[in-house]
Length: 243
Image 1 (cartoon, helix red, strand yellow):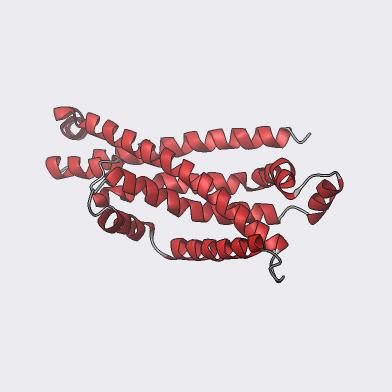
Image 2 (cartoon, rainbow, N blue to C red):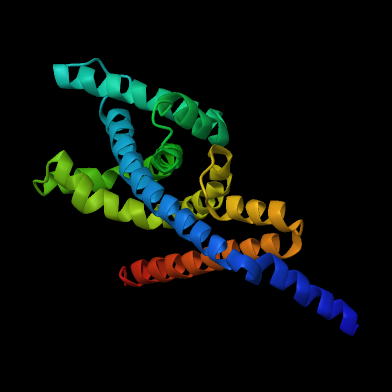
């Protein structure tokens, strides 16, 4: 039994402590968090923008003839957004990442920027559908009541509809951000030194897979637990504000 634990301790030292391999994992963790945070911001902004376009078109122009140039532009934007969502949700995120890195950024090969944009654009498609569903779930009487109070469409959406929709879709948005955090593990395919890439690098040098993989699994788990905790806290606070 003592020999077993001694062997584990030796493996831990050789694969984590020796030659400062733990610093490689720390460097990978920083890159992972950086990609996830930046991609989340892009996903939220892009998703809400696409959701606003699609929901506005669906509520005001669906099945109706265009009466102005603005209506035509809105319908064209709605079609573009529909194609964007279909393409992004219909192709693997790894393929999107490789297209961004090897084709879009072929001249510069900026892996970090390619990863941030790829994950952000991918997340934006899912956020858009989540938010659009939340907006469409709000009773139409809310629109009519706001209009009767003198609110125009823009103020109605910002002050009345979006706050309610956000409360409804917060759990789904939180799940999307958790998925995004874990999806960053494929960024190593384009030579980005994120957490999983660093673990594979350590394994290739030490020929010991146990501790590097177990440790990054624990790190991802801790990150997800922390994110889930704050999302539940925010959800509880928003729910309490209704009373």
